[in-house]
Image 1 (cartoon, one colour):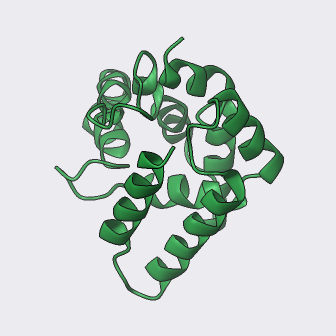
Image 2: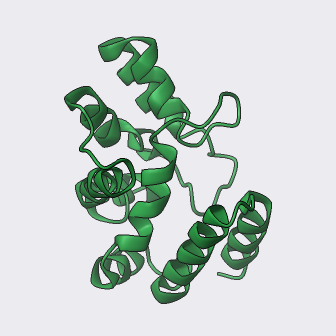
Amino acid sequence: MKEGTKSVLFAEHNFIHSILIVLSWKKLYKKYPKLWEVVCIFLHDIGLVGCNYLTDLTNDNHELLGAKIAGFLFGEKGYNLVWGHRSSNIPNSRLEAPDDFSWCIAPIWWLKLSWLIQNKKTIEPVRWKILLCERWIRRFQGENPSSLWETITIDELKTK
């Protein structure tokens, strides 16, 4: 089974991740997402199915399939919400921040279970959570942590 399929069905991109995004949305925006936004949240990582996103870093357009489905269901607003959660082709959408923050509130037991399901191909869960929270803090301090974040993540993945 491909890494992305495992992730969406059983590990870090399953329905628990989407629930954590909904909770993060409430925390950040002080209200729950609308129903169409919740559907988009549950669709946003569906493009990982069938991909080896951990070992093949060229599979980096995972948001496109979810964006196309959201666009079919909700038009341009759905497409842009999903596509903008990671794409550099359009401005970041309102989904990007809750998606990032969801990892900061994720229970460590769930991150560890996901790590085991993925055969330890990701960064060790405690280290992962620390990196994510540090990135979030830098964002609030007005820094753009993207390039540093990508360097750390790619370097650490290469050591696996």
